[in-house]
Amino acid sequence: MKTVFSLIESPVHPNFGALYQQLGMQEERFNAARKLHKALQQQAPDFLTGEFIYGYGNNYAGANVCNLDVTLRALQRFSPQTKVIVFCNKEDMQYVVKLAALFPLHAVLALPSSEQAMREALQIPL
Image 1 (tube, rainbow, N blue to C red):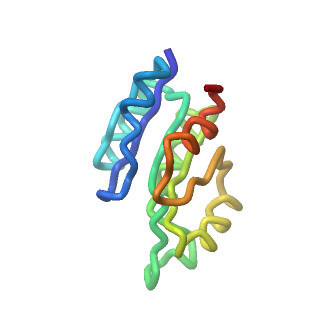
Image 2 (cartoon, helix red, strand yellow; image 1 turned 45 degrees about the horizontal axis):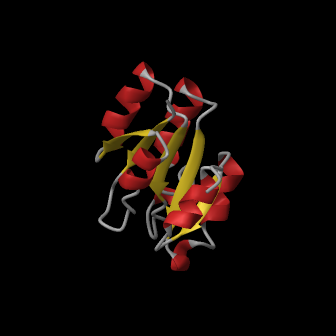
Image 3 (cartoon, one colour; image 1 turned 180 degrees about the vertical axis):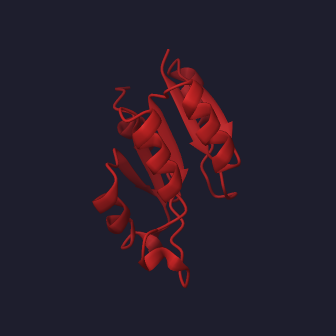
């Protein structure tokens, strides 16, 4: 059974739980990155979903680009084969390129994301 780890840091993160269940996938939801990092040490998911939140005015111009940097570094260490699907609002889409330059991203979906877009990102046919 394929697994999806969802890092949910805001209310705009899409809920595809029903889709995952329909596709025979198991989802684990995390509302804190540190809890997800601990779970990564125990299990390597097939997919990781998270919302891209660019850090205007933070130290993101230097070592960090967004809220997902530390999580993606942990993913490289504990589960490098996991495919990353990032949700991004249209205003921040121009900045997700910076994250993609540092980490492999399987898919970037604009918010609000449709079930069909997620199905395509998971590469599972109708």
